[in-house]
Length: 465
Ligand SMILES: [Zn+2]
Image (cartoon, rainbow, N blue to C red; front, side):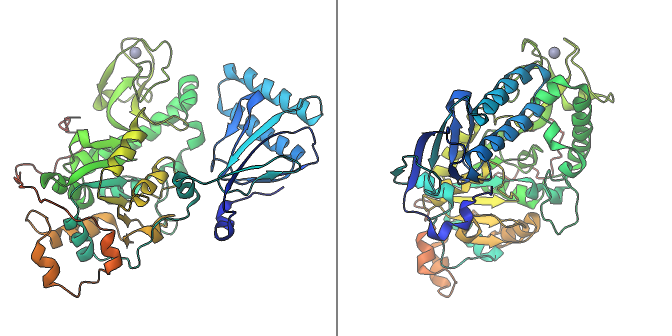
């Protein structure tokens, strides 16, 4: 058996997607599932979404053993109480492997690469979303404009700018990234020191040892955050807000440094939550949908109230305290992804900073811009799958780069000066490129507010969030 990765086939994909629903009674039949396929065993309520598996090619019997392994691994991640349900699944897969049970396999694969011997395959036209998910047919600029001066010019032309940021934007502020930003930098990552697979909501709620490890990790982060200051990349978006050009910030970070840099709280969509306060783990909130016990406690307090005990507990009900952050295997807060999609759809420039774009759903968000012809500026030390589609591709630390961008933009209103274009006819923007950069129709009259300090420290409790 082997894996089927659509990236190996992108240049010669079938023209249509395919789907089939078939019985798995013939254990010797050949099955091919591309990693772009969503597959289900409906009788067992077992399924894997597209790109959540590595793909599969081999006999049906090998596929059933593959499914068994996946179920067995999932069983190990859940508390004792839910294991009986996994055991039923494992028995059903055993029964299918011994020929006592005939399971149905349902497959939808936009890549069109999946098939099963003797199964009747239907074909369908790929949607735009399918194409984007497969990584084909994004518009590509003919020329990338990577200097700070050119990025400043693109910023002048835009009026509804959105940031999509990950750990890389905060490294210069002293925050350790959860994942290594660059394999060559020799730095340390949180997950290199702590075991991510254990840090699930179920793990936290059921295992005192995991809670102790989770709090050890949080204390390290809280210490860093108490000392961290917004860097020029964060402050750049605060400056955009002052000039009426900030549509929103979508961040995977929990460090509140965007707010520290001047982005208003209501414009910052924190996909993974934040560390601004502690709640009782039995306090049900959008960021804690799976409470510790009954979900009836409503205790919350300042993050600084966590004291020195390793795992602080709720003075009202005795449950452990936690931050409102998304734990491993926990869903994003309800509506956060949809809000992020809408923000990008209504923007005219997307700036991606310091996100390796390997975690869903953040890795799908640039596609929302690209399929609408909205230009994307990519400031990242690592490669991403969108690099070739970016109007600017910058491989520099973000703080240093945006400091330079701001010096080109100066202290004025950062709007397009109509004379500027004609005064610089040799500026390297190609006419093709030009079409991808929406022009601002009516520069708004702006009042600059210079009263705010950019030096606000995290932990002032004055972020108004
Ligand atoms: Zn409580």
